[in-house]
Image (cartoon, rainbow, N blue to C red; front, side):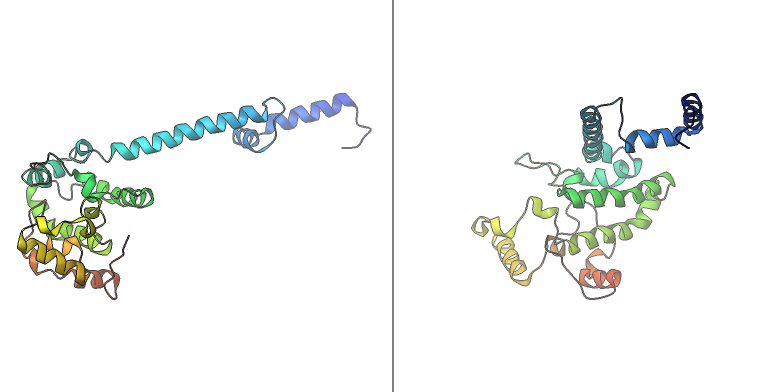
Length: 230
């Protein structure tokens, strides 16, 4: 547009171009171009509020899905593994300390927790498709489901178990002689909780104790067994 264009014509041309902008472009321009109507401080404050609301909502959802009531809201969990768990020492014991579903199956560290939540979306898919929605279907998959958990625990050095249990803090003198001996051997040999404590909260599938966890890891990772110290 030349400098000698009449002011009225220039204004009309500008208005016409403005009307042609799509709603999407208007929104994009609002967030990417400096505004003469909104102060930078106002936009910054608005962004902070939105960020806080998003972050708070995200963490609220994370914690909600960590509750026992959420875990057993699925029929598959309530009717099978939860009923088994209620008969174990992790549910009821002399100290009154309970290990809930998330204590054993969800990492506490934020990054690992997010990864676990993403992987759990696959379980939601199987719930919706009725993969294990009857006792018969669940039993048919019990070994596979157990192996999934064993593999996870073996490759993370039983990370969730170690939220409460640790060789370093054990007073072996207060343990039964056999338990103290086994724990001493396990610590020396670099073993992890799941090597000896399969079935501590849920019924074992038939043939569970014949499963070699080292071999299980090799099969799934296509190489040598690796225990990640996390």
